[in-house]
Amino acid sequence: MARVFQVPAGSSRSGARRAAGTPAVPAPAPAPASGEQKAGIVAGYLAPHPPHLVYAENPPQNEPRSTGGWEVLRWGYEELRRRLRAHRPDVLVVHAPHWITMVGHHVNCVPNPRGISVEPIFPHLFRYHYDFRTDVELAEAIVEEGDRAGLVTSALREDGVRVDYATIGALHLANPEWDLPVVSLSANNNPYYYSDASLAEMETLGAATRRAIERTGRRAVLLGSNSLSHLHWDTEPELPEDMSAERPFNHAQYAGDMELLQTIREGPTSRLKDAVPKHIEATSSETKAGSLTWLLAAMGWPDIAGDVLAYGTVIATGNAVVEWVP
Ligand SMILES: [Fe+2]
Image (cartoon, rainbow, N blue to C red; front, side, top):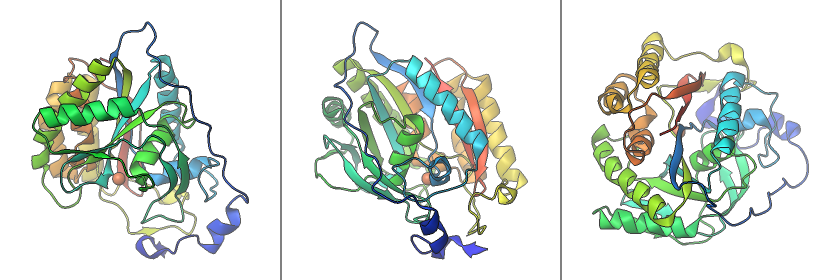
């Protein structure tokens, strides 16, 4: 077993498996066009971002090569992609926990972010070349609406700031073609150090996001990029995708995830206002970072059930792909 936290970037094995040459970079997509369909939030997805899922797919943008793994979760994402296409969105709006901003909520307003996103704990699995388009008008509208609602907000305008792996991972898994513009929001909290006190602020950020989407007339799909139970191994097998080593951290973590998912499947979403903090307390859930609460608040806590498309563990953390259509 290799120590996960001490694995050097680009082991000899992953280097040997890596395809030679420069990864393909997708061409820019056409400008957003709302057309005649109704504007607003057309769907929301719980879209976790384990780098292992991207590694397992072997997309040309990611340098390491794999032999597969975590198939059931990846099949769930394949279903998410089919459904996302059917909603015909103009834009994907993503809130992810690893763009941590200690002061305020930041929105990426850089028109064409491009660079290499690296997972700092798993650099041997995720070194991803990204090149995508931002819906700057919507991004700026979210900054304005957040500010108007009393939140500390900031527009990121510095070209070349590396985009975190959670944002890139969720966006790749939801739309590997990268042919839709994006708005990326930071997490004004830390999933590891703080309580769930900041979840209340995600209500305000969610409502501000919704107002900005409606004001700009976009058809938006929201991605809340959180894993569920979040205790994990600190070692990994010699072959990272060796599924004989993959299982829940313990029974309590698994049971906590199932209780939350049952609540999601039964609905309505308002039950999650109590269930999410309880789940965080029981499982150290990554939803502490607020992405799921932002997602549901932006949708106005709709009176519906969620559709769980897949559940599986990644280095023992629980991960679910879920759809809500308001
Ligand atoms: Fe994460």
